[in-house]
Length: 157
Length: 157
DNA sequence: TAAATTACCATGATATACCATAAATATACA
DNA sequence: TGTATATTTATGGTATATCATGGTAATTTA
Image (cartoon, rainbow over all chains, first blue to last red; front, side):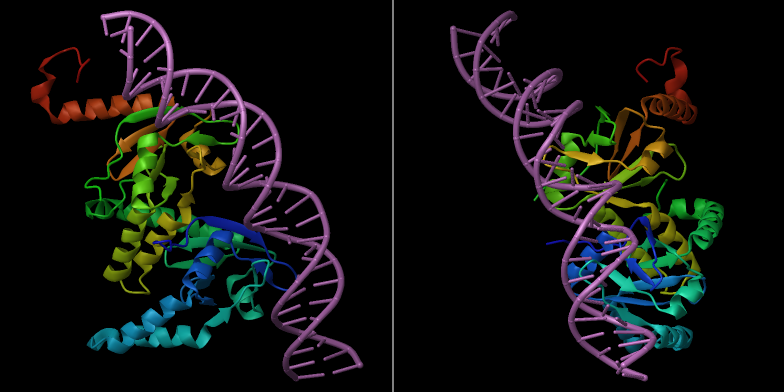
């Protein structure tokens, strides 16, 4: 039995004319082993699709429910946005899901999708947008690096 | 029920044309006993590959998850950088992993890999780069410990 | 019944698991 | 202490399984 469930790595797959795309095998293995399902929604801040297991959304819902934080209203609103947008995506026997026109348009994906692991979540980008985003992140993280290095879990790499 | 799990020592192994390389036996023993897997990613600051057990990344994921909120931009950047680059590496019955072209290129490794233990993590260097790095570290340490630097020959330093 | 959606099959490319041998290390024994 | 033997480890080669992807059949739905 596996102990860890992390979406990792960056994988580029083709998207056919029907919006079909193979979910990376590693991702499928996680979903299968958790007995969960994949949920996708439009990222609130970036031109990309965001995905996670249904488990995680459930956890998020519970947290909001149990929270007595006065300032959680913002997060509550954001959560509503996501749940309003999210949709389950089951993959067929060959491991493909069919992304909707709405999602593809938001991420500006035509015939190629880039899956980017984010631990509990993952993102799906167009190659062009991901290239830009990767560069932005690199610059951003380098700026904050000294701060990160003081953290116990901070990578020195 | 082992007490300590530390990657130690420096081991040099061959890398074949397919990127296959034997993980040092001691490293394998740790992974096996933890029931975990090896995860590797490009070092952000050095021309080398970094590795650790999946457990460690899992812990990191949980900490990020708990410390920041679900929608934090900082969290987004961090997770993209770390998990987007990291990849699981399972070794076969003979103890080898297959390093990706991306990792090998970053570390400038051709046919020889140097494994360097770093406790919870380890690094993989090309012989040339490791030689330089070792020298750099030596100089750095000496700067910070002038007392030790009374001897002119730093052979045993 | 036409269109759209979903499930299944086929195939080439790639990655992975396995086998055999060589080298290195540890162990046993004289 | 030195030599022989056993055991673990490293490495080259190859068979096998997996994966991504194009195509098609079955099913739904409008």
